[in-house]
Length: 175
Image (cartoon, rainbow, N blue to C red; front, side, top):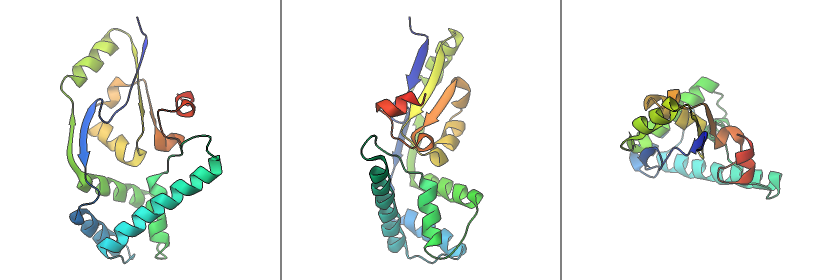
């Protein structure tokens, strides 16, 4: 029988529904940025955010010359949005902003039925359990903790930490 088990997080262990397009999210994000001295209107901030993501993805694709599918780090996007307004922020402020962004965008976050029991059975049977997920660490690490999943895994690798999106050979080699 198998000794090692690799799981994806979202859609496999965790049922999550987010909405990054809702106006309320961008209104609150604009307010947070403004409190730090970076003035953006909500629609302007959303457009700038989406543009930064596209620019980073394009730059990473050029860098790797198609050898893999790059994964941006969302912290860099938020940092650049502040820098564009000549505002410097700490890493903690970026992390807090990312958590706030995610919390407001989440419409549902829960474990699928039976997940803790299944993971515990694997652990009790002496199996190694790994999490390999296409996800942003700034969002995902707190969600893993919130859902009390950390204790089940022998290793966790998220695509933003690896700089490469999952489900491709290069990401699997990072394990």
